[in-house]
Amino acid sequence: RRKLERQFRNIEFVVESKADANYAPCSAASVVAKVTRDRLIEEWRFSESTLQDDTASGGRSKYLNFGSGYPSDPKCKQWMEELHDPVFGYSNIVRFSWAPAKNAVEKKGVSVEFRADIDEDELQQKKGMAMFMGEKKRKRLPFFQKRKLQVVSKLTSK
Image (cartoon, rainbow, N blue to C red; front, top):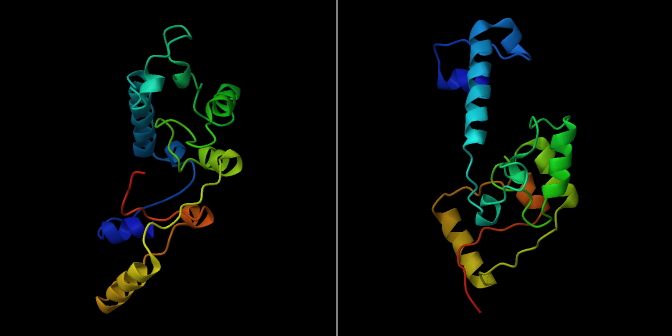
């Protein structure tokens, strides 16, 4: 609420659970969002080429047969179990900030540790320049801290 009110100073916002049951505009927005989502899913094209042409289940890719998309739906639960990849998680149709997907990746995913591509002297020099320039170090998100993921600045081939 505060974030919205900072952004839109002349508008008072009400934030409450089940607002679509109490406010007609919220109810209408909810319907529009659901219809839009359904249309996007009907026309979905995966960026992963290996998932694109699998239409073994009645002309619809098994990768799209996830039921309602709610974690309480048995079809959705089964879909999440069957299509979770231990390294990559899920295809790009899944929002990784969605709690059930996030939890599955944390519980069943392979832990990966990246080695820094930058040598220690170069790293210290960059830190010194950042302090000199007044740049504040941005705190890493817990997801990246827990997995010890680092920013990649250079790729090399062997």
